[in-house]
Image 1 (cartoon, rainbow, N blue to C red):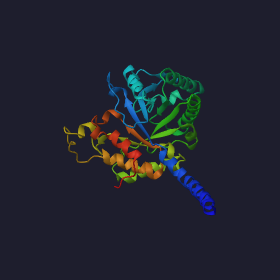
Image 2: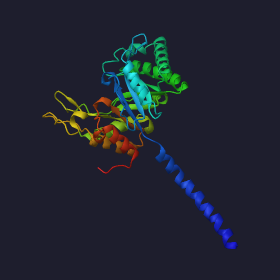
Image 3: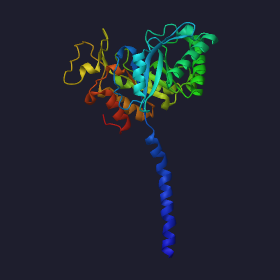
Image 4: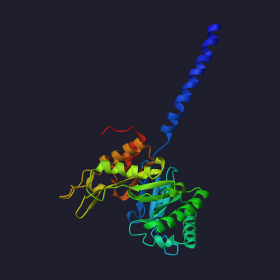
Length: 318
């Protein structure tokens, strides 16, 4: 009787200690990495079925701002919206709308330059999200220049973030790898999509990518807000800087890369694995992809599938 009484509390205590020590680790492991994928309007055809694997966020690319702060949504086509509806049907994918992008944001400076234009900008985006059941907005201004434009952009992000968060939506920004925003902006955005596809000059690849991550962390961005970008295409290092989609390079009908005296930046599983490892090493929020249309449609050669599996698995040895 005495031994039974003494053993029981010890067993209970050991069980409690086990829960105490295992709890945080289990919670950390259960937190999924984000996998955000851009889908440009020119990639979509009527009737396309999503092959998204573990994608968490699909970003419809893109609307364009006008100088008065109103937004032109004409490139967010019915086909693009229909694809988004299919993507979110299972409840696992959040669909957002992107504003801007390379060549599509030339009037950003005017659109955010006054209180009136910023208010119009925010109102148009909030109304579009509500009307199409979208989960957030991605802002891709390439690029604000000087103190005044950065100050106006910060004021715009504060206003937009406040409105979207009140509506239960996400605010993300796409930023160049050398262009962190002023530290006061970070509180208003939920994620930064780092456009870390390739360097713009020939240099060692992995050190460049690490430096890009550190630049933003040292600028005050929380690691969990940073999504590390990867391009699903081969890019020539110099010269014409040709880009070749991954789907052309993968599978039984693969084409060889065109000859180049400059060579190409890494593409494929190698480039994806490097980002997966850095996400886990630095505790980053996940990976961002440009873009869906560059990927292979065959599951065995899909980089999106490889990313999804890698982000949810253990770190690979390289």
